[in-house]
Image (cartoon, rainbow, N blue to C red; front, side, top):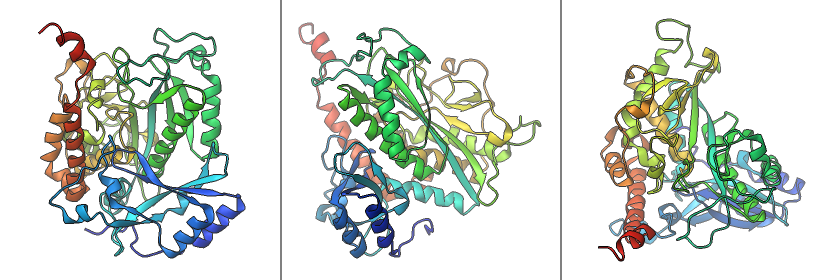
Length: 464
């Protein structure tokens, strides 16, 4: 298939990079390369070295960075000759992503880079490319998705022993939270200094943030991003995570985006609000007149139909870790199935109250630990199949979706089996990418299976 969204020709950006960097007195440039787990890899260059390397096309990195597991090991395929030889990929920085990196003594900038083979072909395993490939499907139909994530995270006390449970940090009062404080204004001001620093750094890094609230968990916060282009928003999510972790450390606490960091607290999600607009007019194509379809267009219904049929088969793309599935439990504000309804937060797919011109679907399934590029790619590819195949959704439900049968996988083992067999999605995402992703997750599962937990030592050591 063609991928017109990515040019395979070299473009002369060096003068733009040089002007931007020199005007701001930038001394160093971070070249950011997101891996399949959403971990930022890359290289740090002296500014002039970066300009020269970008100019002569010598920005490179080993292709094996895209086969790294979350434990930092390589999930190599011994039968893949290219994987064994580990050739370099060429990095092409995207000028539009060039921003000031906050918090450094030396004036520093960061830029996201796409990976290409030396012959100019896009490196099809790279998460940014996977999402661009899906967006190209919509572009060819004259459609453009618009997205807005809501990202939750916890603040915790510094914890250097992984066998010990996490606990909330003390706030300005010197006390730690011991009970839920959803939307608590006094609760959120306990961390006022840290939050102000996050906003300052986010503004310096040109992030488009909206509202921050205190969520249901102890020292759990949520940030809303302004709606925008899928790639741009995904870039912003990764930068925001990095900023929050760095600011937290400076304030002598941890910030974590684990899906379920504390056993008796709600998990952390990355809810995705998605609307669809006409590429030329910019009109929202999800909202229609208040007729027998309730103000929703057929396009909207088919999009939801695709989500319902396929999201349960691609769960590892938005719940990628063993810990991810600990979040998906009734009673902890996380969905267990794919029912949909208006303004119903027990559903995996929620239609927020809105006028037709602002109609959107909120996908409540992804965890905060998900790679944003892959979580969005999964959601959008399922919706695209629904539109293409005119899949009708089930009837909207009333009442609690937690009382309905669980249809989502209960663990990563089951989720990977479903994804492995989901041919319609694999075809559109790319078989090579899917194979590499599955290999990485299988490697991580094998590592997890080798760990003896504190629960086992506590309950089995002297009893069985």
